[in-house]
Image (cartoon, rainbow, N blue to C red; front, side, top):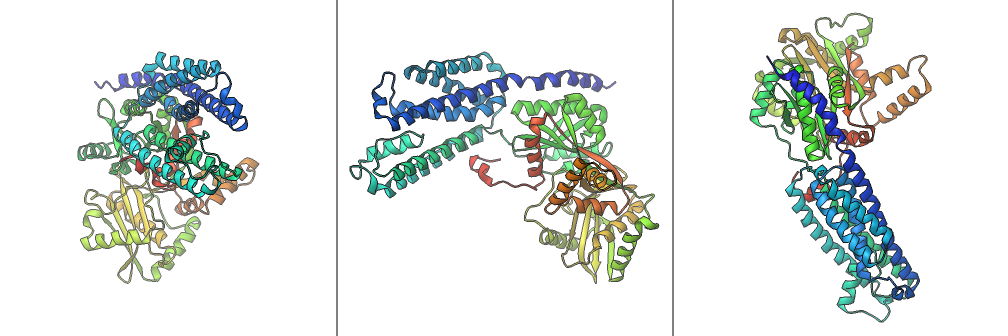
Length: 574
């Protein structure tokens, strides 16, 4: 007898406890924010008084500029560390413990009891709950951050020297000694006035603002790179790929084959009967589609997935799961689910071009066929080498964007020898390929649309021709169901244009139509609807509402709809 039901029960009890364990780190992280801001406030207030009243330096309890500078640095770093503490990172705990102890000493020296007491409380909280901070780190991130910090500091010093030199005419007493310049730059990087005096207020403000900006850039960038969640290089090993393909032959979602992408990692249930493929994107551990394998083993795989996310301080989320899988995720984890849209699925046994609803497609396909287009449908293993090579070149040339898009519903490879059961559909005109499709296997009797490419000079309607011919040829390939494109927010687009739609739904539909100018939202819905499919909803699963913006951005980044400047590469290998 299988022990998977026991695993499922254990997962149901353990996951809420795992997720609830983040409450203390969040409290400590928020309190660290407070201590950091208090440090900044007290230090900058001292600096402001120093500017307005030179007599402040001789008042009882006054401190040197060096102590004020140290307080500014401590405050900045504590503010940066707050977020990482909320994510339970052990490296952040170590750094915050040292900084809070240092902050206590500074406030004692400056005789600031209120701020000092806050630092003491923060230090006590960190020591009391040190076992809560156990998230794993990435050594390459740490040393990369050190290197980047050194480079940025060197650049900041050089730019600071240049700024002072450009304002040399307004330095009181003429060009100073190198030591005075170094002190001016060092203190200015943390927002504290240095020894140089300028005869023009504008020069004084420019030098101070530039130096403070450079210092903040150096400190924040270095801290971000040192404390960001580690993002391991995703890699699907040959052994894992073989195990996944074995599961796919028995239990397969329409998106399951896309999880054989080589840029994903995999976690397994304890019994090995189910797996979840994922990639870490901007600190989000993003799974795609349903868990692969026996549905009875899904809870065990979900438990392993969440535990892996918790161990690394990643935010767990799922993109594009079915309603059945979404129900299991919500039940086992207490997560929330948001309907993203619908997948268009066509039953090939009932598909026909006859009837009034298919008139437009029937006329378009007939017109394209009369212009000399012919369509070939074959398995990838039967595609000649020459056709493969040309298709690879055409795929890159015909792509509408510089970046290859896709994560949850794209395979990321074309006509590969490791995918012999994929289906290749090519439209030729006078013997020249003008467009093609690739479908991936969906279990034993289905296929899912992966790639759709066409020459921009090809006749409009050639995509419809290829889809129709693929649906006609499907029974001879042993395919009874075909998954077409995903239509985001389809129900909102459909219901929003109907009689009786409320004002909120109409506004939401209008916003989607505006977004369709840049994203293929309405056009994909209209294209899919031509083939009279069955609509199957797909969902986004995420921990809490506060995590939704982060998860949404990660999903857009994974699908390559959103690309960021590659600053992260400065911090080491991904």
